[in-house]
Image 1 (tube, rainbow, N blue to C red):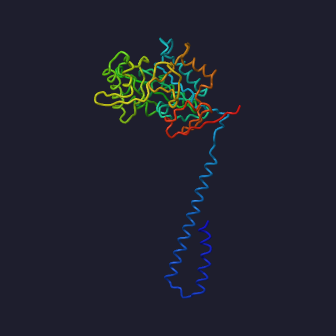
Image 2 (cartoon, one colour):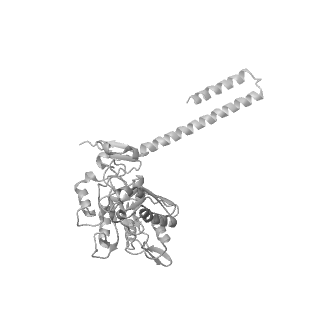
Image 3 (cartoon, helix red, strand yellow):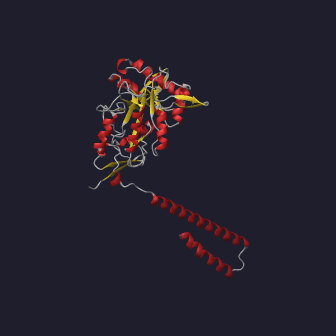
Length: 372
């Protein structure tokens, strides 16, 4: 505004000066004109900046915050990781298989009760962006069996085989808004993973190009508690190499223990990192076979990255998926409830002592009070 006043006062002075001294040189007139031009440009720039500031303020005012008392987000709550294997038509031979119809029932229950699948990548990176009021869930498949995913060729095009888990999730997502088809597949290397049409590379490329993920389950589904240092690195390193050769540049940093068995304690460091065939592997988390502990998010002080629990995708026994689904219906205070903002961690007052603040990175920690 000061520049505007200077400009207004400067013009009459020019006029007065010109009337009193008619001998002002042409050179002096040119200097005056240049100064006027500079002032005009400065004034235009200031007006433009004022408009930009006003626009930014308007955007800020239009930003809508959630109603914390209504949504009651709890981003220290449990994030279930569900463990599936193969799908069967009927009469599953063990609780590790799920019938096709029961798997569809699981997805329907997730959707109707506010669970939304997220990727393992987002789980590890703490990038939870599900809608406010909803609960993230991670879906996993072990062993790389064809009923979880395989391809068939139709008219020269590779497509998921009908009623494999990927086909079912793809179709479910089409008719259920807000539900993304997300899952991670932990593969072995000695069993022709996802047996069916297409090469190993084409199968993996289909998965990652369609929002799914692949990771390591050892080469031969080994009992890690029974083998030595060199064998552990070979079991992990072979599959690590297989995936990275098929998918150059792809990050493989989560691991699923066969049978849920970890190596003996003095060798467990080999899950995090090791060397095979002259190449180093690195893993950030290791997944167990069953619920070995509460399903804490990664920034909880009790989160154990190499003892991450999963729940078996079945029903009928304590500790299975449907047991937990019923448990969270009766104890909603333990569920992770999203605030919808991946850059903010929202928790009720009184929970802050359970936060590992060093693991939050640049995330904002928001502590709120719910008035009774």
